[in-house]
Amino acid sequence: MNSNVSVIRKSFRCAFPHTIPIFAGFLFLGMTYGIYMQVSGFSFWYPCLMSLTIFAGSVEFITVNLLLGAFNPLQALALTLMINARHLFYGISMLDRYKGTGWKKPYLIFGMCDESFSINYTADIPADVDRGWFMFFVTFLNHLYWFSGATLGGIFGSLIHLNMEGLDFVMTAMFVVIFLEQWLKEKRHESSLIGLGVSLTCLILFGADNFIIPSMIAVLAVLTLLRKPLEKDVKA
Amino acid sequence: MTFSQQLVTIGMVILGTVLTRFLPFLFFPAGKPTPKYIQYLGKILPSAVFSLLVVYCLKNVSIFTGSRGIPEFLSIAVVIVLHMWKRQMLLSIAGGTLCYMWLVQYIL
Image 1 (tube, rainbow over the protein chains, first blue to last red):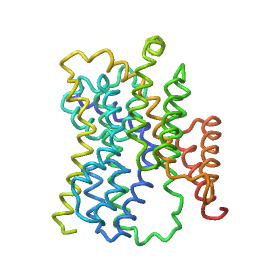
Image 2 (cartoon, each protein chain N blue to C red):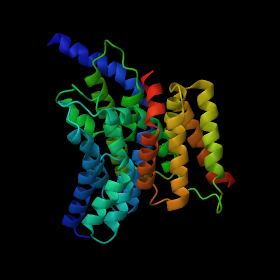
Image 3 (cartoon, each protein chain N blue to C red):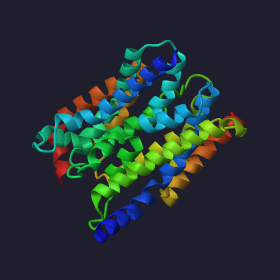
């Protein structure tokens, strides 16, 4: 029992520093979301419970618009599937990493937002730290930050009179940093460049609201066609 | 929208999110060997996905109207310079965001 507790404590100590940027980002963004909901006329219970149960930032912002519009559950489902389709790629990337994590696995998958995926995918977990608990704490802490931010924003939103314009850029800045980290880590940049080229092309061709699905299909197609030459480097 | 309609709408969003996260794990369970092609995708996709996420964040920037994306690109440059200099995630993110807020609120 004692050794169990020390394993858990050690994983927490190792995981927590990885989540500090997310702490700042999610508190900011979560509060922005909570304030946005409050300004749109919803009680703090909405951001509080939605941040717990949905836990997917961009879709939660869009859900505010859905709730303000006409009742259309199928549209809500289709829109969510489209915006969150990128999670399919995360799942494929995490098939191996989430293996053998026991009862934690369903929660790890449930909480696999952009940020949890990014950290759990890129972090070098020391050999003497339990992988399952490490990834559990990364996911759980992110979940907690988002929930706290959203709830605080929903409660105290009206008291904040600072000019918040531009705060949403914190999300962009975070993904630029994650992209840079991956770029600095990888030996060859084909996949990053294909991702950039394809998604920019699709953005121009299909427009801001419809480019994700075509981008995903095109990325899959190009990476599949280039499997032979790229696979050599991945294995090396 | 009534309260129960709101609940159904939120429920649909939860269902959609959970589906996109769980489907790969249901299709390729841990007990069975994962096809080689899927293993390859698992290794090669993340880099492309991180690119897609950056473009996704910038999708509503118009380079022909308004501020022409200048605040966005200047602030991203700040993020990159800060990150290459100190390689402190939090500093790069905070620096870029403050720069952006300053630009959109006071300059452009």
